[in-house]
Image (cartoon, rainbow, N blue to C red; front, side):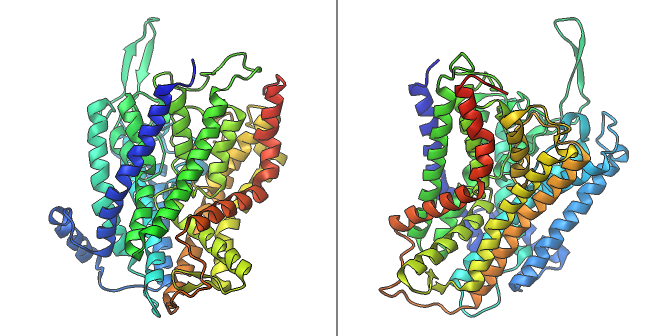
Length: 565
C-alpha cells in the first residue's frame, strides 16, 4: 500500500467540507446568539418562552461576570451530583435490561466529572457498565449541557469586546437555553437520523445472544446508541456508547458515517470562529483566527500522515495496520486521530496506542496546546483568546505601547488571567504525570515499559486536563488512583480556563473603547497570524518538550534503531 490520490482526495474533501459549512453554521449561530429572527424560532420559540416561565428566568435581566460564573459553576455542579446519583442507583432504575449493578464509587466520580467537564474520559466499557437509563438520561443529557456550557463562554467575551463601561455580559440561563434548543438539539436529531439510516443501532431491547461460527454463544450488545453518538460528536464530547467507540460497527457502520462523524467533531467549533467575526463586526479578525487553526491542523495532520505511511525497520512493514480499522484504512484513521485531538472530543476509530511514536506525539501536542486547533465547541475559541491576549501583550512590548485588542486596552489584570488560563492546565498535566510515574498506584496497571509506558501515563493526564477524553490505551485507568487523580485534572483543565475568560470578559466590558492610532498593532493581518502561531508553538514547546523528549521522541529514535516497547 502507498499513500495515493484517493488519500489526498479524502483529506481535501474533509477540509473543503469544513470550509464550506463553517460560514453556514456560523451565520446561523450568530443569529441565535444575537437574538435575531431565524427559521428555528417558528418551531421552537414557544418552547423557549415556556422554559423561561417554568424556570422563572427573566431573559431581559443580565448578569455581571461573577454572577455569570456562579450560575455556570452551580449548573455544572448540579449536573455532577445528579449523574453521580444515577450511577450509584442504576440497579433500581428503569431501562436496565441487563440488570447491571451500581457503579463503584471512584469510577462513578470519575465518570460524572468527565461528562460534566465535556471530557468524556471512560475508564469503563459502556455496554457492560452503564444501563440504558444512565446512558440516555445521564450521559447523553450531559453531552448536551456540557457542550452548551463550553459554547456560551465565548459570548461574554464577545460582549466584553463590543460593549462599553458596563458590568453586564449576558444571562447564562438564556445563553444555555438558546444554544441547546436551537443549535445542539436540531443538529443532533438530523445526524442521529442519518446514522440510524446507515445502520447505527437505536433500540431499548435486550442484548442478543447468537451462535458464532465456532458453535459457541456470543452476546451482541445493543442500545440507544445513535442519539448519544450524534451529540458526542457535534458537542465535541467523545464518550462512546460501546467500548470500541468509533471503531465499533454499531456506532460507526459505514464510510459515510465515518466521514460525517469526523466532520461533526470540528463543525461547530469551526463555525463559532465565523460567529465571532459576525458578532464583533470584523470578519478579518475571524479569518486570521480560523487560518491559524487551519495551518496548525494541516501541519499536524501532515506529520502524522508522513509517519504512518513511512517504512519503519522495527515493524518490517509499511504501512502497519495494527490498531487501525480495516474498513476505513490508514488515512481516515489518522485524520480522525488529528481531528479528535485538535478538539476536546476524544472519540476514536483507531487505537492511538498503536500509532507510530511521531503520530502519537502529534495527538499529544494537539492536546497540550490547549486544543486551540479548532478545539472543543467554544473551548477552542476561548482557549485561543488567552493566546491572542498574550500575543497582543508581547507585541505591545515590542513596540513600546500599551497593548490593545479591538479597541480595548489589555492591562496587567487581563494578562494575569490569560497566563492562568494557559499555565494551570499545563501544570496539572506535568504534576499528575510526575506523580503517576513515581508512585505504585501510577505504574501498577501499566502495560508497557520504557518511553512508550511513559507516553501512556503522559497521554492519560494530558487527555484529562485538556478535557479531551481519548485514551492511549495500554494503561488500565479504572483504579482508585487514576479515577481520582484524573478527576482532579479534568476539573482544573476545565474551570481554570473558563473562569479567567469570564473574568477577562467582565474587565473588558467595563473599559472604554479607544480608536486605533498609528501605533496600534493590527490584529487582523497575516503578520499577527504568524506571530500568534509562533506564540502558541513557543509556549507549548517550552512547557512540554522535556516530557515529550522522554516519551515519543526518544521512542521514535529507538524505533529507528529497531527497538520497540
